[in-house]
Length: 117
Length: 114
Image 1 (cartoon, rainbow over the protein chains, first blue to last red):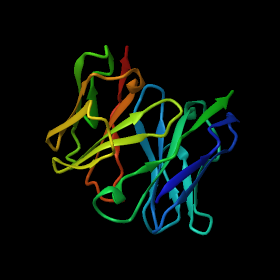
Image 2: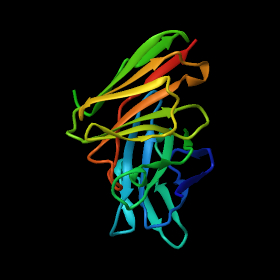
Image 3: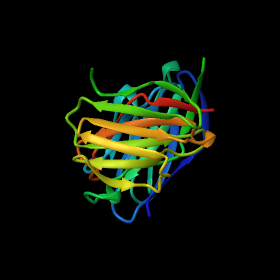
Image 4: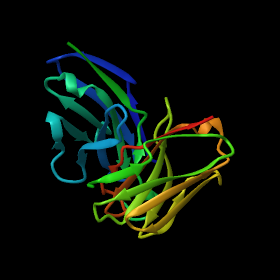
């Protein structure tokens, strides 16, 4: 069965510092991987996704993530944190099988990012 | 309206009330989803509809009743809820329910059961 583990429920960085949010997955087949962001009182917004091809994926707001099959990881990074990045971030995995429950997204528990001035 | 909209944004209801949540997507998608988001718990998938047909019911109690009259609209009918049902209910849509399609989320309905 698929699963997603996000290491660290809370991460705090200073403005301008590197952001690193960790995500490890388990999947029986090569997965599709996603990162979503949720701002307070809002729904989830897609940051980026990996489906196939280049393993370094660039997303919105300066975020990027690298798919590492050998480490079963899909960590999210941003070189320089901004105050507006403070939010909760969710990693999700989906199997590469069309239809039915195998296509659904499985979400991690989320990591709340705080940015200190 | 663009994207995925949900109404109402906030709802307070007693345990004996009946209410409905509404979701509408303006993206031309064929799949729609209901999720429950509780504090300190992962997002819980409740229901999946693909081309108006329910393809997944994730062991949700019968006090939650979904309805999908067409690919653009999704409802969640609520009756005799429990306090532990208080949560943020998120609706999402995607091109299809197959793997690899990103889901677009609405802003959610914050439900409080008293």
